[in-house]
Length: 343
Image (cartoon, rainbow, N blue to C red; front, side):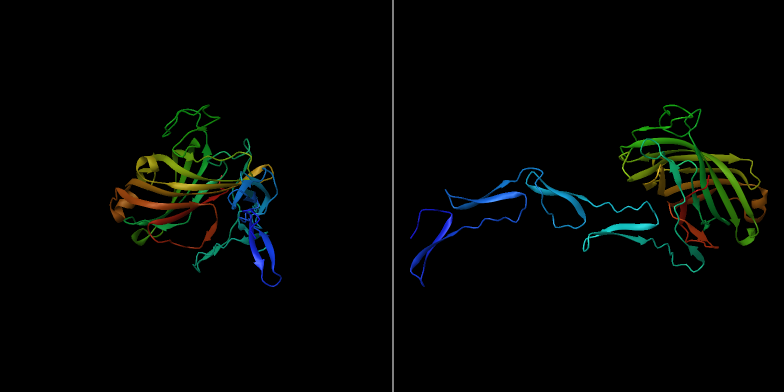
């Protein structure tokens, strides 16, 4: 017998001969909705639970689950342990943080590889100033196509220039004190700096035995994507926008000039991660740097190899983990430079 309720399923029980009126069950599986049957049409309806109602998103790697606008929202568990030499993640099967030591094995038996947080800088308004002063981007040796030497280097001694802006596209807000401001191609910050690029040249073939170092003053501009000061871990894209420097009168090079950077037609994207450690920041940073070197050799080189006016553009990688090189020459066209504590 139909009792006129659209929210029941009515039937006669053949065993007892009595009518049964089974309520319609409405459940959309969402913790954050209240489900009911509309007696007018017999259809299930849902309305959001009040914001702040406890819920469960089914993910052990989130915390603080609560309803917002009919959905369950939660905050991911932060597993950063301030050690850049571990890979930190929450295991969704057990809901606990795992800190796996980073493998630095480059597959080359002639290197001794390990990871160490080599760049630590002081706090500056809840973040770190870039480029990181007191640190440097260092490289191992690599063969240079078309040139009779291997080359390595350290980009170091970052300073805020006190006069002039070098290759920078903007005037520093307070020369010598404050050389960064909001803006740049990545929408976060642009920063000017002076620095020293220390090259090491190791002769090959007929120039074997030559081991020469030269310091090139350079000017550079770095762009960074937005980051949130105060966050304990800040990870964001960066770009080496411009870099230029030149020397003359060196014993091996009558002239040596380097240019690099995205704005000079040599894309040089990168990435930086800042991890808070007490009142300081551990900086992990790299750039995939494209550059060009022009040089005019002196008689020391001319007498054995002739003049070579240009080194082809190379892709060079800078990254914030340290490898101890033991005579390693990486394949031509790829050069690893590492953010370290070179000052």
